[in-house]
Structures are given as structure tokens and as C-alpha cells.
Image 1 (tube, helix red, strand yellow):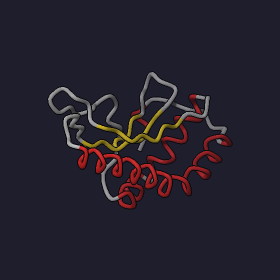
Image 2: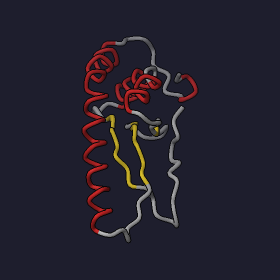
Image 3: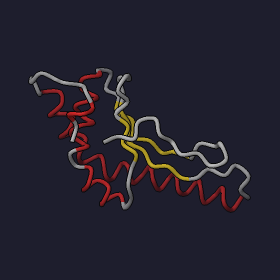
Length: 124
């Protein structure tokens, strides 16, 4: 299930986050795509190399999948370069991991004519 709205903070500072946002402009399609991807959660996280944050966002059109990193704003320049590299690496990893799955999930979501139940409890 998702970790909706649960972002760990360190000293009151939200973590740095790289997010894959599912937003086609149609809530039902967004939720169907999320569910299709969530069915592959174990394989996706294995390929990604770590657990991800899966956010269904019940009262929102979009859903998202993210990865967090502690965010220390007082880090020196070397550490900030490391953080920048981490963000770029994660963005590229999201592309590599999700791109081959996204078309199939989108095709299925947009052609599925079965009644849709948006409650999160039905996921997984």
C-alpha cells in the first residue's frame, strides 16, 4: 500500500525527494496506471535497488511514486554536489525503470472498461 502523506523529517526538514508523478489529466486513468504499476512493485523496487514511497493520494487526482533522501541544508559544497548527483542518478533510474512499464500500464488503464473502484483498499 502507499505511504500517503507520510514524509519523515529530520530536525523538522522534509527530505529531498525525487518523484514520479502520475497525472494524465483524468483521475480514473491516473489511479488505474498507479494500480498497474503497483502490481509490479516488488520487481520495480528490486530493479531500482531500494524501497520506494508509493502514494495513492486518495482525495487527489494524481498519484506518485518517490524516493527520499535526508536533506541537510547546511552541507558543504562537496556534499551538495553529491546530493545533486544523487538527484540526477535517481531521475535517470526512474526513467530506466518506469519507461518500459508505463506504456503498457497506460494502455491497459485507458482501455479498461470495467467499473472502477477508487478505494485504496482494493489495491494490491
